[in-house]
Image 1 (cartoon, rainbow, N blue to C red):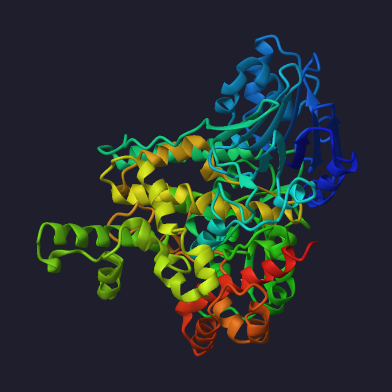
Image 2 (tube, one colour):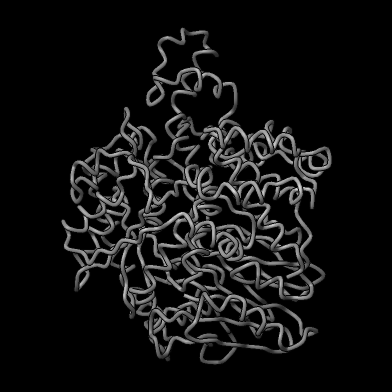
Length: 617
């Protein structure tokens, strides 16, 4: 696990690469490495996980014609090494990095298809004078780049690129428009106009004069398990989960697991306990003033007791979010109003472990989010209208007590109503922005952006899988995996995600939506696996997760901060917002309207980011 950075050309001061490395040093406190020649400068900071003594980077092939730096882990590196040695390649270390070097020699551009892992790779082919950047299939590890005027600059975090003189801080208006809807900046955009995020499953090749981006991986979407014994399918998922977890226990340092008390993390902990040579260290987050319905900690303790884990809890207080908000924004590099609770839990965990497994990815591939529950009722209503059938026959499912809510959203296409579970729908942004803000941001439609991705899922009639495809290509990399990486690596903690083993992901994508949500059972087929390991009361409990009680905290101890950050004086610095509308939102939120929480938080985070990142630091 590392942070990587670099640039082409030699017209910058030699200290630039060191400055780029220095600002991402939190990602790799154990070691540094540099490579520089007439055409390229490469740097890395290392968090030592595998082959602690011999795994330093950059690494070379035997003839010193290929140089590699990378961030992440290749979990099947032992098997790859055997194959490559059988083909005549000679290894000097026991590290996973060296399998990339020899794998590139052997397989060329087909290399990433051989890798089971999470990775952002930079390969410098000295003889061909070609720089290749590769990002993993689902976007577990980040990789940003700036390409212009035959110059390429790249890094694991945006802040590294900003240290290079060719990279400016000009705002990308389309990116910000999407942020105010989605609460994150979706790849390939970043908040800066001349910085892009390499999309998951993509590769960039710089040939000395220009950069070319291509897609090396596409998630298969064909349904293959439509008529199958459910127990057989559960066995298949179970077997792959076991193998995925075993691969992700390969480590020369201490490891543990996030444990929320839900079925995903609990199942991972249960399987870990079968293979770990000693009790698994597990970690949960709770809150000093948690609302009564928050019972994560209780269920996490039950799982920990069941499997004899070494369990630790971190009790977070409101003042920590208030005091640490600017630090979090600094680590995230761009406006991000998604989940941030893992910042504090990761900091706590790092006292005990260097590697942690999580249950992330299961919700996105097996279906459990609120908007997943809406897919079938809305599709059924829309079908009834097209066929002029009576709406009384429509099954509203989870929303039988909120029929008007469903009817209202059914006026929209899936990629449009999806935004009702974000911050601002496109029409609502009309009210949010000032005249100047509307001119900058309203020409860019977030629903049209989502539509383009949704339609890539193919002509499937499976509406739920189409929505999952949209999430896998937006919510998963741009929110879930983004905060997962940035806020854990802020404390030099590596997070591994067994559910995102590509074999499990591809299997999940081949399962019909009817086996993911069945009746009113979320993640139905995954629950058939989890019930083998997890108590029934956890199987039946509703999803919670490490979600902060922001609405309560913002009204109570953080209300002075809310008023200050969203004051007319501070917002007038950029003039983007309709100040009267913002004032109205604040008043209604403080009066108890929880539906405004996302809207308020999205604006607050943006304002803190704007003042911090556009101040010339």
